[in-house]
Image 1 (cartoon, one colour):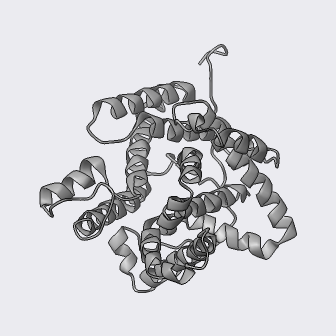
Image 2 (cartoon, rainbow, N blue to C red):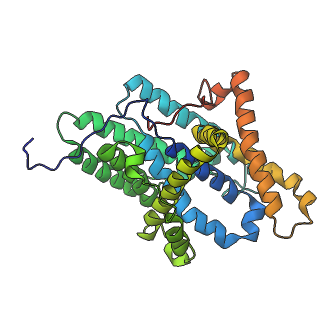
Image 3 (tube, rainbow, N blue to C red):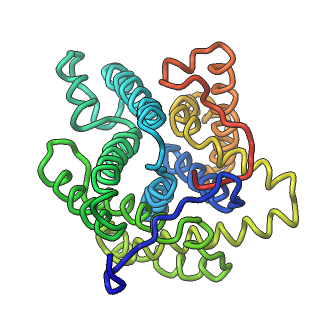
Length: 337
């Protein structure tokens, strides 16, 4: 490669690299995800729900793209894919069956094998579309990276990956939008270019001002507008600043936040159990017309309940039903690997 050739350095980050801010970001994003799936809160504050959705999932897709390590061997990568695909198939199938008996958006009108397969293979159901997008985006990048790593520099591979993602979202029948693939792609590009999360996301308390200044405008919520990546970056920047302050002001709480951030996957997989069950104790909060007390309790119950249920599944080895020998990860200093 000549000196004039554009080059993005492919960065390998040591597993010991300290980067707690990415776990704090993931913890905040997963709590927001639970929040928008609390039906009563969404009914009371529909505009707030839509505003949060406008930047929350793009930020999550970006972080997930940054976390993808394609330098794994094929065996390790296939195990990674198993941990995505198996829970997706199991939980989407369960949601499809459940939708025949309970009101679920996009549910089945009749229980048929063809209907369940269509939800799994094409349209998805429930909150699990994110896993399907992770699967396809990671498979395409892994294939492009290893097929072209001796033929192209990093910039060339990233351009080919972007073109492959675009073609896939436009040509295949799976309902994966170009916008969702774009935010994952930007995360991959950021990892290749800069490596560490804290080199990409710089913490600032002032980011919250710009975030609030944009999110109040419904016209800015379209994922294909520049306002959305700006909001997503502002949210991540603010959580990076909060991570630094929390680590020095309250180390014990910081460790708790880190633990939640390390275990966003089991919370994501299991939280519908608790958000749907919340309707049974919702009448106890009839005294609160704002639904805020109910919402705070449900957030706490869902977060703690997911971690507890994941522990039970691990101890009974039932976590294999979700494609993983262990759902919970032990608390350790965050890295992007």
